[in-house]
Image (cartoon, rainbow, N blue to C red):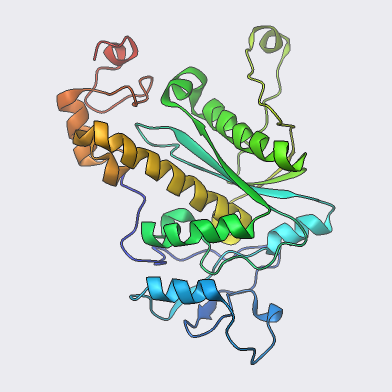
Length: 304
């Protein structure tokens, strides 16, 4: 699997499918305008530019050109508020398919009073590191609350990737709920609800060892495919999670430079695979996985 970063700021690698729940047609972004696609009704015609973040974005994107793009907005979140939601937490994960390092789950909470999101929010994989780094403080200042939860490689080996995602997501939400109180609705990217505890049968109830997360209360979960492209809260969560996890992998690279984590972030690049074949796994690898070039039985038994 290749590294998720892209070479140009705010460059979409593929066409974005149109969103439902009221998100308008894809518009052409004019770099000289303060209007974000989908938000033209929120600013009066002829209003002078007031978006400081857009100016920063333009300064950070000298290669940007007029192109057909769509940025995430709050259309779907507002539909949830119309149906009675009080706090909506956009949730997205990063690192599910990596061979090494933790899995990270970002959470970005909005409420009915939340203003327009920063210009340029979209799936983190569609943005360069420079663009994401620029957006992180904007997202943190814009959202009602935000957090990133982690699950370690050891927890991935013990719980499986879905259980580890659940653990990381509940940790992030628990941190937020200790500050805000219960978050009633989660907007989760994808089609599978990995956040909620699975329904247990009698045998599971006797044998399972479920962790208790301080502050966490099970919310209602709404899933949406490509929510990280269309929904600002989920796009924000995706960006926060990726930048947080990428920083961890760059730090781990100092101690294990041969695996190329500063660039591949723990994914299966050719350099990472070669290092696994010649040097074996590190304590930061997911030992229960079928690691390229590593004998599976030896890795599980700590003999690789």
